[in-house]
Structures are given as structure tokens and as C-alpha cells.
Image (cartoon, rainbow, N blue to C red; front, side, top):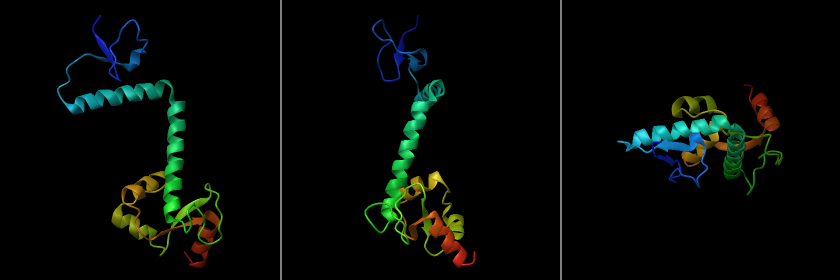
Length: 146
């Protein structure tokens, strides 16, 4: 039987009850890219074998990131609508203050949806955004005639 090593570096043996998809053949990989590709392949196999824990972790991470971004753009120390004061995180969203969201997305390739929060954090929280609840956001859009 060829020697095997676990993803976390432990040697496969009698005392080690690691699962089959947690192992790597003990091969001297030539490049960092090859090691990374093999590790990613194993991570995908682990995810496919039991996806629910990873999904739960990703949901929690996305919610934390949303709260962090909304807190940064809020007028208080917690996420709150700038017009009506609602604090329900599920209905709060970001609004371009000058109504230039489409132009800004064309210029900066700013993403939409969940990826927007990651982008804003990575970009250092650029100016021009505010937090509004969905109702206030739609009311603003209607009153501006768009």
C-alpha cells in the first residue's frame, strides 16, 4: 500500500481514521500550483460529500459581511435606515446617494447582490452610498421619477 498523508499533514496509519477523500498520495509535487489544485479538488470532494455544514458557514459569513458593510454606511453604530430608522437587517439595503448606480457599475465594474458587500470591503468602503430600507429606497426611486 502506498504511503498516504492527510490534508492536514498527518500520516495515514492505524491510529488515524481519516476518510478516503481526506488523503493525498505522498508525492513530491513540483509546483505550488499543483499542490493548490489538488487541495482544491479535495475540498470540493469534502463539500460534495456533506454540503450542509459548509452552506451554514457561508450563510453566516455573508450575514456578518452584510452587517459590517451596512454598519459602516449607517448613520449610527449599527445598521439603520437613514430615513425611517428601521433596523431589520433583512430589509436594509444600500442606495447610491446621487442615484448614479448604473453609471458607477459601468465605470468600476461594481458587482451586484451578495458579491457587492465583499467588493465594497475590499475596495475600502468607497463614498457615495447610504443605508435605506427597501420601502424608503423604492419611495426615493419613485419620487425621483426613475
